[in-house]
Length: 632
Image (cartoon, rainbow, N blue to C red; front, side):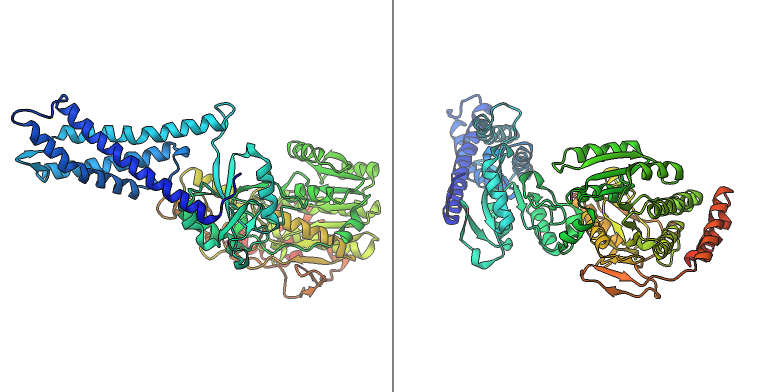
């Protein structure tokens, strides 16, 4: 990649643009001459009329040239590099030529193009438009073919693109270094931007820092940029949003290096560059992990993850692998999801034995056999039904899976002397108005009760929604946008807590190291986000406009849903831990006898498929209002 100072590059490109305009002017003049010659069969000079048409052509020549060049500029023709000529460039050129032809037709219709008593022929306007488009397109297409011939080893390889790199820090340097070594990527970085004024005009590798991100729109046009690469892993969401909005306004493709939550292996690679997503705009400050504390309870041990094929469960498996347990048992009842995560984990370099287990957590005997054979020492219980409306319609399933299944796994953990048991809970367990939320609260109570009478260290981790997880609203909205809308939102004022899956899992691992037994850890979810604002952002990211291209339709809260979510009850309180993003709630004491009796009622109602008795029992145990919700 050649190295130029910013002034030299801009000067060279300005001269290229001037040469383009001069050549285009000559080609337009040639098209006008050709139109007259074709219309009059090459006989412009005659005893009576010949000089009239020559005069007419001489008078119109500068007018049409100026009009066509101005139309080219207005349509963006001179913001493009000829080497990248494609369908978009041809459409812009065609629009420019067509607009001039329409103006000439209108002028001719009102007799504004008369010279020495003779009006301009309609045929000349049509012929000139066709010739002009052909002549102007010809050199551009030839330049594109030459570029492809020079850059490709065979015709299926992509044409190289020009890119700006945003971020002159360590991550940007690593991206730049690998880009220089990977010619197959098809991207040439031609400049760098950074908001640190001390880096302005400094050299970063072989390139120059042209300016700050405020200069991005100007440089995109001046340098003929096709792509902007954001290499600031620690940038706050507001900064990413600002840069992305500028790129969208400049009509350039945007790529981003994943945030620190995703770069958990500490490596930066151009293969990790991807399109900017909604998750980037909702990202948060990096998590500072105590990796030594996490390794102290995972490394060299047999670890069991239930629900390992799900969004949280699979990410748990990925991150647990980093701490090199002796064995990792991935348990789930869906064979396809377990097969998928098994194949992914087998491709990792860590020397960890992967044990896939197809089992239903409601099958106590099957679980007993699994625990007896493999003797897990650490258990992460992520298996649960989490879809609120579906659990309202399938109450029995919610009880047998979320409560009975959790009890099975938790009690077997005590029986087989598991060292650490971590329950993945939910913010919907707080003052539950849904069956799903109530079952998660009861699961917490089961774990807390076992913590008092077992040597196993039981903890629960409570957090809100995770973006792009299975059953979340984001995949549904993407389907609705692809279908042309409308995008459905429950309520214009509904808010939810959101966090990224990698961040949630990192905090779950850290909470497992903090717990001494019986705690409910609450993750710092930041500020709640309006669902309607999230829908607006996703539509914008799809390159569409709300209300014009895609409508938003408010459908009302579904059964069991709240207008807003909570992370703690008033009685639980909140205590800081040594980690700023993890808090601990004060466990509520529940008499073992009361819990046992309530669970018996729940399981009896589930066996008899008695939804009303189940809701009454849930109300009494979880402190919600499920009977009232059902009768609404």
